[in-house]
Image (cartoon, rainbow, N blue to C red; front, top):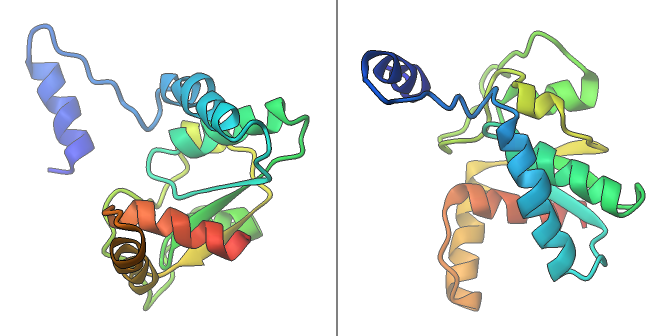
Length: 167
């Protein structure tokens, strides 16, 4: 009953339904390349030095990193922030395949820290990776609420933790 498998089976059973398969469908990458990446470049007036992002489907990480690399002539560096226990950090830093969970470590964050190399993730152009814990992300959530008046979820907060670490 995994949500992606459930969506796939429901689409197969329903008339006029399609399974978009956001993990493997490269339209995900293209949407972030032409949309999110271009928006970040424009809003920063091209002064961005680094991009850090957690990975769910891999579309945001790959699309934005590829756009920023191209737009900056290779100057902008991109990094993965991965929850402890996920195999993507190990893959990026040591090129380990197949992905393996790290025993005794794990995360309760939903939507990031996957244990497979998606088509979208494989298109990412990364210089490296760092890791963040659930507690670090929770602390960032509360810091932002108290000091900035911003309320966000754990994955957004994990991205900010990554930005602080890379900076």
